[in-house]
Length: 353
Image 1 (cartoon, rainbow, N blue to C red):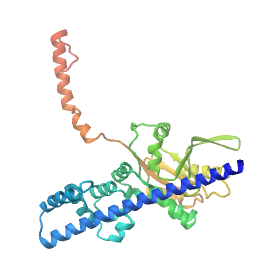
Image 2: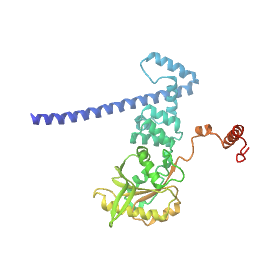
Image 3: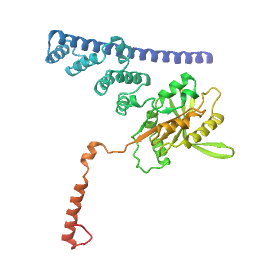
Image 4: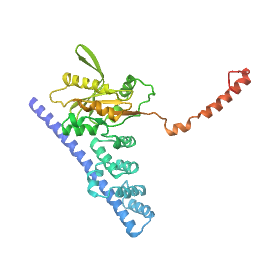
């Protein structure tokens, strides 16, 4: 009876996993067919408008006729038909549509149509969204933060310190600048303020770092030669299969930062690295950096490290700016308050008129 119970439990687990996988494949297949249908509708509308000289009003009529023919079907409104036509314009190659755009929900594709004008960028964001499993809100955030232009832009020595495959992947994963605009920190912040802010917003921090970063610890202790040292942030990257040491600096890059990072990487490789792990990687995040100084500092280092900048939210949103009083408004208000004060309490020579 015990043997039967164990066998039944194993079978049940296997069947549940098989059913989940099949259901996921079915959902993906249905989505793919729907996107290809929308693309073909948009292509045909565009072609007929071109050859027949039809105006924009034909889309209104098509939407009404299609709704009468398929009353239970959603997604055939006039507005959506216009998106289908734009979608076909943006993705003229059906094979690319099938490989890339059809792997995303229709809502993701609308975001790409609205917010990304360059075909190369649009395809890049679509591939990233599919591979990384981004939600629509995450996709929007990555576009707004200009991830396409920031990805892989950090200054590193990876090509000299890592095997080719590892070097290419590591370079692609490191950005410049990193966007920490979710933090509300003043200009005179300390390194511990930056570290605390990133930890308090760990989910946003990991989203900005990218998929694959697993948090290990902050102010991570290392004992070397009977002395205690502390790493600002320590991660493990699941795709690179290595520890990633992050040092935070609230000033521009200095050559001595590379020496300290080299020390930390040696210690992590000796004390934490598993024999199956790849060499640990260091990322020095600074307020700014001079490319020539960074190149000299990293040139002869045997440890893989990169230097990147970060940006904080330094300006108020435009909408909020317009709602705030100007200096002139404050001066007028101050004079008005001073006059009112004089009426009630008598003249005060220290208050300007």
